Image 1: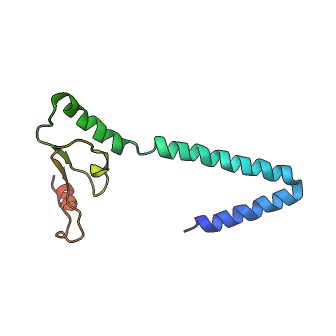
Image 2: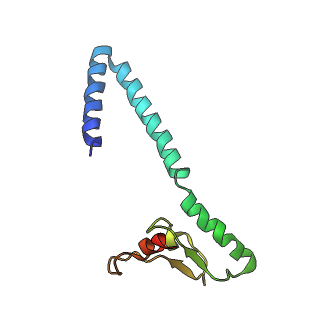
Image 3: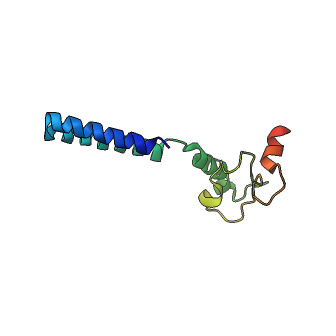
Length: 117
């Protein structure tokens, strides 16, 4: 909730610096902001929290060699912390996650699991 207000304050500050120092200072600030945003986007898009998708690849890798994954895949994690079937591109995989559906019993299955694994 603070981000819009901080962006306005940063814009006001950049404008006052640009008026005091000229257009070259504004160009430098815009370039610095663009470069830092590009670096952040690269990090967040490729490294940050890549483990959730990597684990699906690593768990299903033996299936490519054996042709079958005995027992299937069971993710015993908190609700929505695994990428789900979006990254499983193999047919015949038995897939199980803890139930977090809004219509399921309260507390959810993941809450009950973490209370008494």
